[in-house]
Length: 497
Image 1: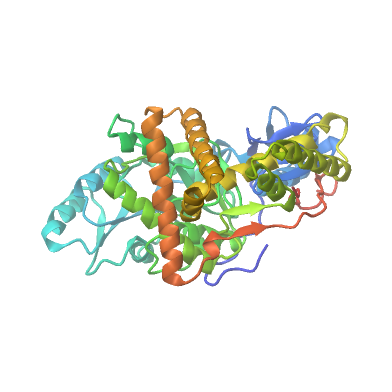
Image 2: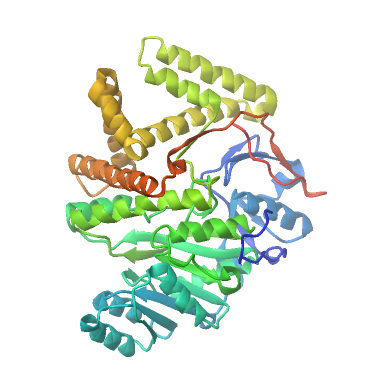
C-alpha cells in the first residue's frame, strides 16, 4: 500500500465478509487445470497450489473458511476475481445521498428526479442564469429535492464538493442531470461496499437506446464514458483505469475533500487515481447500466471531445507515473519499429524477436505441462498491445506528427492510411455499431482528431508535454505470483512482458 494522498484517508484492513462469493473474470486466461491464472489489473501471472485451485469451482470461490478467504482476498486484490454483489450484505438506499450538479437542463433534471423518487437528493445549481433558474428550481421543488444555489458557475467538480459538504449519510452518489437512474441501480451498487476497502463503484454508462443522428449512434457504440461490458478493478495502467463522474457511488469517509476544486475536466480521473494511490479499491460494475443522453450534433460533440483532451496535461502534472499514452517493453518497441520499416524483411525479423521473447519467457516462467502455450500467448499479446498503442499514438495523441510524416513520406502515408482503415474496420465489427462503416470511420477519425488536438493544446498552454511521452519500461525477470492456502502465499506480482 502506498502512502496516502493528502486529504485521503487509508482504507480499513478488514477482509470481505464471510459467505462472499467472487467470480473469476471472463477475460482471465486459465492453464494447467486452473492452477495458472493470467489476468487482473495490471495483468499478472498467478500460480495456485493444488489446494487453492480446488477452492475455485465453476469459476467461483466462496469465503467459507480462513483458507478460501485468503485466496479470495488475493484474487480480488489482483483484479482476477470480482465479488458478486448479491452475496454481499444489502445496504439500505436510505444511507445514501444523491448529489446532482446542474447548469440549466430542467427537462433532463426532471426525468432524473422522477426516477429517484423517494431518495434523498441534493441538487446544486451551479450558477444557472436567473432567466433560466426559475424553471429549474420549480423542477427541484416538484421532485422533493434539496436545492443549493451557487451565485457563480464554479464547474462540476466544485459544485459536487458543495453538495458533498451537505451530505450526512455514510454513502454519496454523484449523478449528472442527463442520466436516468433508479433506486434499484443504487441499491445494487451499494452492496459492493460490503468490501471495507472499497471507496467508489461506478456503473456502465450507455447511450439512451434510440436511432438518433449519425454522431449520436456513433457515441452509443463508442462513447468516451462507456467502459465496456466486463467488470473490473479500476487502477492506473490497467484495462479500466478510471471511472466517469457521470454516475458514481462512493463511501463518504473515503472522499475527504472530494474532487479537486477548480478542475473542470478530468476531475473524475484525478479522484480515482488519488484514491487508488492511497490504497483504496475502486470498482467498475457493468451489470448496472445507466442511460446517458449523448450529444447528437457534430459541433458540440467535437468541442466536448477536444475539451476532454485538454485535461491530459494537468493529469500528467498531478500523476506523472499514471499518464503515459503508451507503455512499451524494449522488445515490443523493437517489433513495432521493424514493422514500421515496411521492408521485405520486416515481418520475418519481427517474428524472430517475438519467438525469442516467448522462448525467454518459457525459461523464466517454467510453465508446466498444461501451460506450455502461455509464453507464446503472452508474447503475442504483447505484440498486439504494442501495435494497438502505436496506432492510437499515430491517429490520436500524435496525429500532428503523423500528418507531417504523411506529407513528406509516401511510405508513411501508406502506413498511416492502413492504420486508419484497419482500426475503423476492427472497431466497427467489434462494437456491432448501428451505423454504416463509412460514417463510423469518419466519426472515429474526428474523435481522434478532436481529442488529440485537445491534448496538444493543453500541453502547449501548460508548457508540459509529459502527457505525450512514450514510456519504455525495461524488461525484468518475469515471476509467477504464487497463492497457496496454508500460509496464503505472497502478494501477487505483475508478470513482466
